[in-house]
Amino acid sequence: MLFCPANNPKLYYTAPSYKPDCIIFDLEDAIEVNEKDAARDLLVEGIKTLDFKDIEIFVRINGVTSPFFKADVEAIVPAGVRNIRLPMCQSAEDVQTLCRLLDAVEEEHHIELGSTKIQVGIETPKGVLGVREIVSTCERVIAISFGAEDYTASLGVERTIKGDELLFARSMIANVASMYDLVATDTVWSDFRDEEGFVEEIRRVKGLGFNSKSCIHPSQVELLHKTFAPSKEDVEKAQKILEAVEQAQVEKGGVIAVNGKMVDVPVITKARKIMALRQKE
Amino acid sequence: MEGTSGYIRKGDAKVTVELTGKDIEVIVHSKLKQMFERHIKQAVRQVLHEEGIHGAKVLVEDEGALDFAIRARTRTAVRRSRGE
Image (cartoon, each protein chain N blue to C red):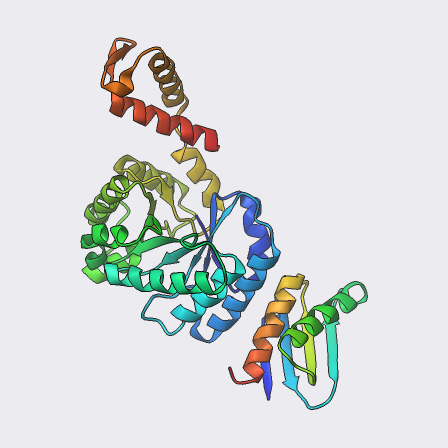
């Protein structure tokens, strides 16, 4: 997900050239208070006018306690935005507040009910500990994003390159995302000049179960794609497994062997996910 | 009352709207004025019409903004001129 401040017109047509899977236009932290209206107006016109083709568009709105929250939703959803990141989610009630507003806006504008989806932003210890209740309260929730800067500030700790201080939060989010079949999006890597550190962090969070990451600079997009993509060996292995499965009935609880190794339902599920990821490239 | 929105930077436009009781007057400053003045004025007038404005003086300081940016900046400037 490539972050773009919503108040810079040039980014609306340069960002797509870097081929991110998603662009997230930011109405929140990237926009000064006295420019919130301008950013919102620009986003509305941009969404109505521009064709982003296959790139998914998300918008980080201002939080539920912000004076801009309602105006953001009431402007961007009729304009065509269908994916909203709700920052600083700390309780199921936060998501319910957004859900109720979306119900009303969709009904008023004859938009398919439920078609606007939510990515919950988990950025505090309270949010981390309540993430299961937060994501299960509304069917609109499709993803969880982790925000490390606010999280470490809340904890009163420094962010480190190794990220030990984030392990608990990341593990919690990845597990809950898996449980509810949601996308787990990791936090940004701020030092975009440190490509080695960025790649190392991607490998780390991929190993924890994350399948997406926010980027703050276009140079990070290609690195992210390469590092998250399944390896050639993983793809070949998955292909062999699925070919063997076609000739057996493992889905009904059986077990087969591929290259002398046991292959059962969990292994097959993993192989299918790898092939699905491969097909997306 | 006057309202301004946008920045003088590449791809953007600074639009200043002063509500008057008279007609619509649109002044464009742009390096590409010869090619795009008519287009820019059209975008501005469209937004003024949508906002129900019949009398205004609008200054557009354009730095290569696309239509959507001209429209957005005009709309924000109108709202700010109304004190919204």
